Length: 296
Image (tube, rainbow, N blue to C red):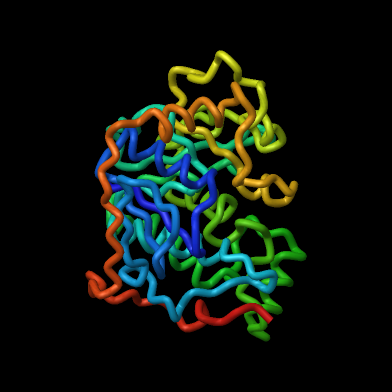
């Protein structure tokens, strides 16, 4: 079972190197990093794959602030639709093997909203290839302004305006197309609640406590709960708070402990970094033209 992710950029930071190394530790030879060009500082044991096999580079888009978040949502769902397997965000730290027998796996991010409907998360996903849910989510990404029954009146109006005038591909609500809130619609529509893992499995650290893996909060308690398989390190919170992802980690922090375990103390370091841009796509990506436009 492949464990797959995407990177757009010239090099990985210390944080992404740690997270990818954690997966190669528990799942050697199974980790794929999709890119559109060679990337510096990829950990040994990660297989670098041509992202054009999933979505052609000329269909990459960003929002008006230069964010690739919307495209990453499209890519993750297209990848799962085409290949199946696991998707992981590059800020997921694996602390135990992903030993799930279920064909569908995803996590619950938080209980903060008071009801499960809004808490489906997309940082870890497992689906078989060609699943109706992944097809539905690709369509949501390509058509972010189609109305949903749960839309608030002002969101319905905003979506109507953008459908009519076509001046933006950015969803009117954060994560409302292919992100957490959009996926929450799919969980309801396809009755996926039985596959939702407890928040302690992938998201034991709440977003408001994003700093705790980098200070002494977990000193001596690095294994967390027995059911915990990964820890979300909240890249977006790090970015918005000006956290330097390349700085050395505080001694005795969770990040420091696992960096020593997964990076500094390892002896099994096979080099599988093979970038093959000449490999043709397994099948043409059939994506709508609006996904190529940048927001005005």
